[in-house]
Amino acid sequence: MTPSSRVQAAIELLDAIIAAARDQGAAADTLIARYFAERRYAGSKDRRAVRELVYAAIRQLGERPRSGRAAMLAVAANDPEVAALFDGIGHGPPPIGENEVAAKPGVAPEWMLSRLEKSEVAESEWPALIDRAPLDIRINWLQPAPAPIEGAAPIPGLPDALRLPSGTNIETLDAYKDGAIEVQDAGSQIVTLASRAAPGMRIVDLCAGAGGKTLALAALMGNEGVLLATDTDRARLSRLAPRAARAGATIVETRLLNPGREAEALDDWTGTADCVLIDAPCSGTGTWRRNPEARWRLSPERIERLVETQRHVLDIGAGLLRPGGALVYIVCSLLDEEGAGQVAHFLGSHPGWRAVPLTLPAGRAHGAGIRLTPGHDATDGFFVARLECPC
Image (cartoon, rainbow, N blue to C red; front, side, top):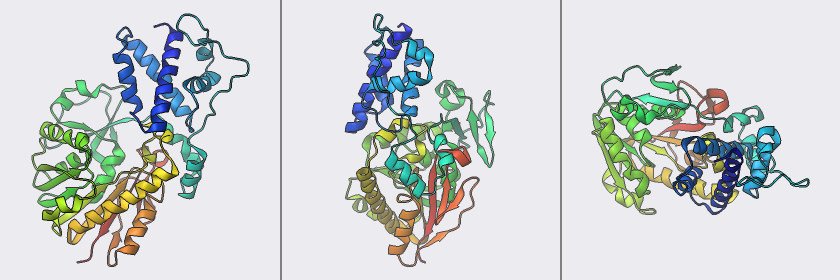
């Protein structure tokens, strides 16, 4: 591919990503993979260059742009080399018209910025929300200790965590193949510590997904006790079993739940769990640096639906705990309606429950819990609270 045809490829991909964001379709990474699966002539350098152009545009634009061309024009406005590739030669994009208007740069849609401000996320922290994320790993002590990894740096306060150089191909490392390390953001590792998981406990990871936090819990438990991982998403949950096998996490059980009938499927756990960890479905505003096009998918209505879902899973989790047990509520959101406000609502509707003060390696007190932000903590953004039920 010529440099100008790479720009045109980025425009085509951005058109597909914009449409998918509008219609809640496939993720950007999936669309990029499909695009190049149909274009075998594109070499690795071409794929890398096009991907970088696509994500440069996505990160630069808070509002969903009207077209892929308008998005790339925003990149061109700040990069003369890209602007020069709008030359109309071969498969390149047509020259930039005198009256063409580029998409407007920004961190997020205006309505979202207003909510971030209301949630006490300072404007000075907004740019960090869309920076490139680092590659963090967790050392899995259920397997033999891994050999030293070139370029790995320790993460303060997390003796089991390392930060790897950007671009590290983790899947080629022997330590990854052997299950001695797992990819997990430092923030995700930190909030999991709020579970205070220990050997012999009975723990439910209620919204386990593919099981990143489940595997961290198994390690904290030293493979002793009972650890149930549940989810309503069959595809995501199916990825946990092979991951657990590779990690040597032998105490993990999985259970697929039917939406709306979760409590029925968990009847045998009612009133018996020491801890229920809820990594609840949320807006993902704390993980935009990993999924920047997620900003284009959000709407006030979608957040309202997520808030209702969060209340639903909190009620389910509360019913599973033994007297004195702990509900650990986590969202990778920086919005108070999903975090501190959600916990305040729960405490107000569940007499006798209390929020337990947390001491974690990073983050700041916020409401009844702790919030981590990319700008302050150099992690993904999270809110976590530990709630204990009456004895």
